[in-house]
Image (cartoon, rainbow, N blue to C red; front, side, top):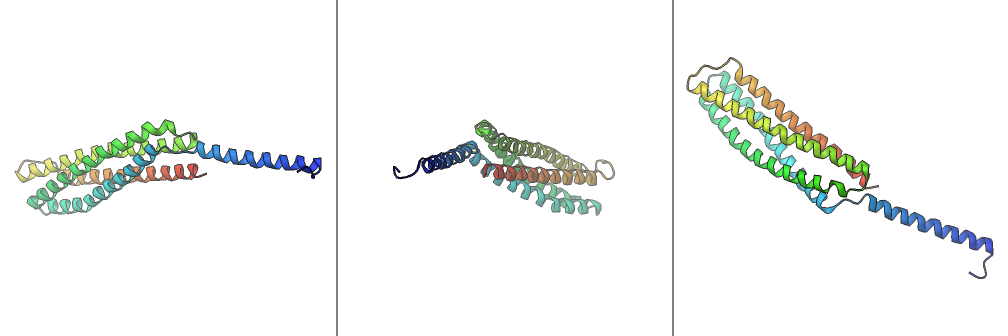
Length: 199
């Protein structure tokens, strides 16, 4: 380096400083977008549970259509049998909802360790939608129980309001649509999170 001119040495030092500065900045940015392992683990498990919930609740819509047909034709025995099966399935969905809320809680605990404010906001949006999904599952379960009680009353000959089964089936289908919607919004928020943290 002693054979280089002063100007060349200055340019070389400048380039070394710029390159080093760029490398440090990239490293720090990587640190800034670092995602805690606890958050990642809870996120992956939560996403799998949420997809399972969506699958289970969506399957119920076909059975609900059949329950409605049985009710219209006066076949209360088959309507009651199928609804009893749906209520049993809803217990599995409740168990999945509890598991999901645990994972969402773990995500929320790790939220403060995410350095990027934009990434943290995207994660918070996903958490909010997952919690709304769990809350909607409570409505779903309650509406299924109400449908079962209505069908039991019909089966034993107690008077029920005309169209009450159809109204409850519609409510349950609305619950399922809301569950799917909250899951889709949570997925979109996590896609945004991934885009931010990948930079």
